[in-house]
Amino acid sequence: MTGFTPETSEPDATGPRPARDRRGRLIAIVAAVVAVALVILAVISGGGPTPRQVQPTASGSSTDGRRFERPDTWSDYRPAFHLTPEANWMNDPQRPFYLDGLWHYYYLYNADYPNGNGTEWHHSTSTDLVHWKDEGVAIEKYRNGLGDIETGSAVVDVNNTAGFGAGAVIAVMTQQVDGVQRQSLFSSTDGGYTFASYSANPVMENPGTTDFRDPKIIWDDSHHEWVMVLAEGNKLGFYTSPDLKSWAYTSGFERSDLGTLECPDLFQMSVDGDPTRTRWVLAASANGSNYDTGAGFAYWTGEWDGSTFTADADAPQWLDGGADFYAAVTWDDPRKTAAERLSSRSAIGWMNNWAYAGDLPTAEWHGGQDSVVRTIRLSNVDGVSTLVSQPTDALGDLGGQSATEESVVVPEGGTDAVPQPQTGSYRLRVALSRADADPARQVRVKLKDGAGHFVTLGYDFERERVFIDRTADAIASTMPDAYRDVRSVSSPSKDGVVDLDVLVDYSSVEVFANGGRQTLSSLGFGVPDENGIRVESDGGAAVIRSFSLVPLAVAAPVRKDG
Image 1 (tube, rainbow, N blue to C red):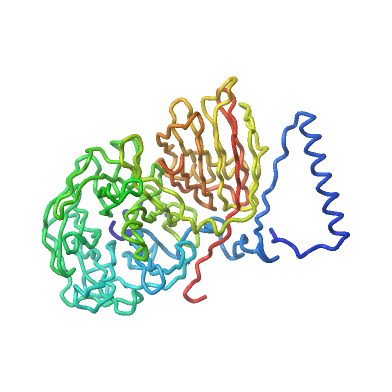
Image 2: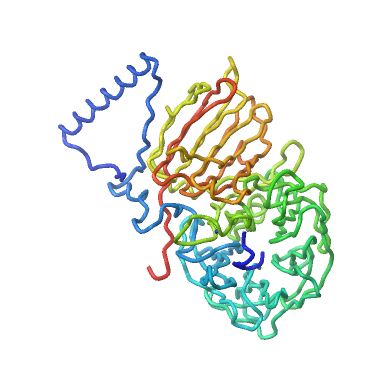
């Protein structure tokens, strides 16, 4: 994706206490007995279970509860565990790489927003892809006469193919000046913290086309050369190089049904972890209006022979059906074995949408946020090789005390007699089905519920679709029409049960349905300090088979000057 252009953009719990004395233990026992009695009384009187507030505490020291407290200086919608810049503008992720014990990650950043144009590469590092350290701008814009620094990819040149030294970090990205897009090379010999512009830039001159951008580079071990996929309007162009400097065109993958293609990707994966069954995946961010979806990450499985990609099927699949998962990148872990690298990858996307990117009510910073890092695998789903997603395992380290319920009947009037969060960041796992008698047509989970506003996560049993509806959230009435579009994905239940794994942060909702076979990532805004959960059914009764609510701690980035 090109850099940001303002003119065209569519924006107190505490932890466990020390051991009590005998008197304290007696008080606690009495309180527990009273609580049980109250619940029994409520059930006898027909009132059902009483909603419970989930205490955001974790095992360990008495200070653990502080992990769930956001800094007082943060604004209402600053996310607790999603990456955002301290200020100014962010957009496209750039594929991370692992070097010297750290993940190095860059995203497009505009320190001059909203009055100045152009992006550059902002650098963050991490040991677990959940906690981040802000390293500042690594590649500055407008320094070499070729324009700003836009989307591309960085690689570790282990074998010194480019001549900057073994292990040098080489970044190739789009620069644009006077509307002309070219590819430039920058090199780093200090591990990706600072970069120098190659003296012979650009390494790829524009052939006379409007769209010529977003290079994604991989090493093709089978053919012993670098491969680049480039976004060229309605075509993905393939190029090869021995040295990252000179590039030869080999073929193109053209589409007429997906609008302008951006941010391509190409990688190989094994099906269900079997290294004898592999497919290549070609992907791009695209317009899915012809496929009853919006902008998102489209992909095809197929064969790559070193010069040409041949798709298994003409129609694309979509990694995420939500409104806000764009410009995504994927990567593997070089510390793993070859078979392990084929079996799973990581992915991260930009949680925003150009239809309203500049309209969001985030005063401290702009441009949305990054999704959580997810683990993706290629699985055989009903005979089709399909990318399946799960939140990265490291996210579990943020979890606090859980609260659970099961076998709760949801009448058509609905219920809020489920565990209730005390913070705006939590993980909800819920299994839903229709009641045997008078079965519901739909079940809806209202998130961020309060003061008449909420984000609806729902399941349509008759159409077997999961959906997110934010028409009643706190900002919907002031946003462009596209914000109020209801996004849904086909997600057949298993034995009549749909399983949802939901990550809720202060300004977002990410849904992983039925083991991550389908996902929906969406921004969503409630009224500050209103974080209720209410479950409703339509056309009959539904059943909450299981309900687990876990608060998630704050993973505040360590800022460069902090």
